[in-house]
Length: 568
Image (cartoon, rainbow, N blue to C red; front, top):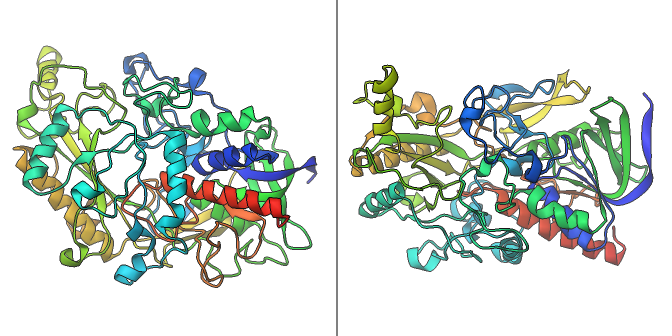
């Protein structure tokens, strides 16, 4: 095969343009580095390409799409199943969500922007399970601050008020006021001694750094044309491009990291998806930010005589200790909300209140915790809008014409939902590897997954189910589903469904048991870094994006310093 090699040698090549890749691009270009970014999907501009203000009835399918699992107008190109890009499952179950567009999965997330707490970096020291991180909260705190200040996040400092020391304070914009259903949830939770506090979302409630405040259209998932919410395309890539130091290569499917005779990375090989030609871009430093599993796949596929088991994999750990957030949801119909007068309750595209983890794991009998994401209100009608109202036992659940419309009007806005997002304990037997028999349409070997839940996660899920149903009961409502039992893992979603995968390229102090050091730098190859969920030594009861960006910012400043010293 003829390989087209770039004549230019860049300072840094970044694979991926999402939360981690975008952050690295911003910090390094502003420090003077000449950066090239390899992106597997097309370019994307939210100001021109999003469908932020389209009505669902303008879609022939009323918003449903077989190619976009979150709706025809969803801003993310990708999903769990992408034509021509298979993956396989060996043990257990796994669903792998991938984004194929500039900005990656920052176009798909709830923008729940939570810092990990002090305990989250030392879980093994607390309960003996998994591994501690090679860094502490104090090491990463300055970078959380930088992300808060540059990106913008609303919320409140409630650590001292609630006594939840593992929910660290930050630098926040004012939060939006709670909606009616959220106030009723809070009232019920107060009686159950469950804390409910303002959520922390990276959506602007005041102008910041040239970006406008949110105008409360509620359609954050479609791509924000005013750049009021966070995506890499709206926030991180503009300053990198403005520096004149960033070159983006779209529709480039990365195949492997190339290396020289000295064992150092020399760049990245990729397939041009338009004409299927093979290219190599050359760089002095390679940063993998393609998403946790995709970065692991690149390392495992980067085999050579020096690295027969994959690049940076002398430990054999690449791909192992793969985790996802635990997740399940319970909905209920609340009679007190029936026939609520219509009012403008759109707010931001997400919850205004949430529940941080409050439990005592020693007393509960299972390790690690979860937070609760609240749902309800008057979402835009469309495919799947009802929140389960059609299953409510007192609803006729059918009919035609005026009767059906009257029934839906009665229940519209009367449903609430509770979604738990918790921590899986990392285990070596949860992993991804290269399938020896399957390649994608570009001829690149694909991943085979092995993932199961343990009793730690099942007991946590049981607690979620019981808690959510007790809140619905305290609100005078009725759940729209029966509680599943242990044979169904108490309703836990399969691994990968929550789209918080982490840990498959984990950091640590010992090169024999980890891939990266404390600066997200490969132990084996000093000019290779990873800047996505891969470096996580453990999950937490928080969404991972804010920590991805803080780690990426920290690694970028380290790279800048090492380049200045001549070490990279």
